[in-house]
Image 1 (cartoon, rainbow, N blue to C red):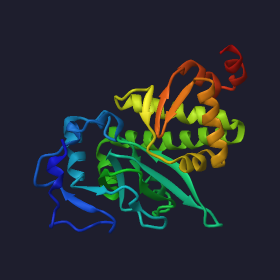
Image 2: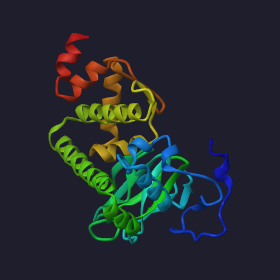
Image 3: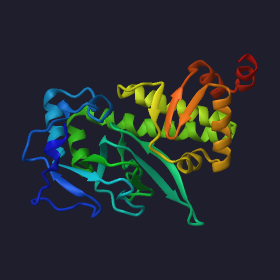
Length: 265
């Protein structure tokens, strides 16, 4: 599927110094043909609009596992559409500790943190070998003025990030450790299902340390919560492979009915 991506362009400059650019001009590519198109920006565009959007994306870059896509304080040049693979974004606090702010999957658009200040406030790292499409932000803004559906898609993207951050804040303030873990697993389940994969079995690309950081918990607390879900036979964990055995019970746990679940099993 990706064999043609082995051709590395010598005509284009490397935009961030952390990955190899791939020249898209030597072979046909289009947003219309992308398997995660429905999750990406150009939703509801006319054929002409889709073609114009595709013309924006003249480069894709590959990032090896552990490699950086952008760093905090880097200037805003691109938004990044994840084509395959996965990423985490991290914020460094005043004590120098890295706090995981989000995880990104194919079809997600990264880099919106830089829109308000024209500089990124987070760092982005690949959790596995990954590839992103580069969307030049200034050209995207110009195109959005011509095609209202594109502007609406961009607005929905920004709104969804605000809603996600609000939900995470609510979770951090009100949920117990097991409720947070249940909510996290259900969120991943939904996102995998949206991408055509199983909602009941998937692989965690992030480490348990990353999960603990994202959920605002200690690593040992995450490990205890995982052990309890195993004991209740709600979820099994084999290394990083997750299998949800009882989806209704996991949803009940997310909503604070954990004691009832345990008593009924």
